[in-house]
Image (spheres, rainbow, N blue to C red):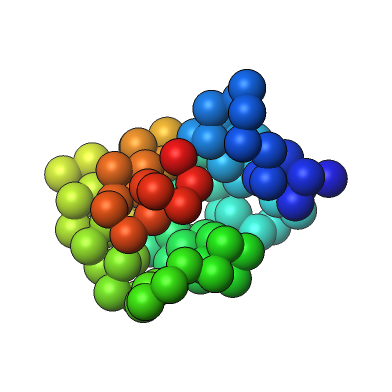
Length: 100
């Protein structure tokens, strides 16, 4: 079901599709529903890369770029809202043309 949702190109906004996919992850995958920490964000970017097979893509480097941009939104315990993560991710030139 999740793959079907992520592959849809028409109608639903890709950010909403990823929001749904993140929310539908098995219990225990994310330590705080609706928020991501450093390791969880890296894991999602790695899964995204496996799913879409981006050309010339380094998930760790891309994660570091995204996380640096998110640092002003970090709460004291190191979490960011998943909406902010997806907003910043959607603007990345290595990702944007392949998904959004």
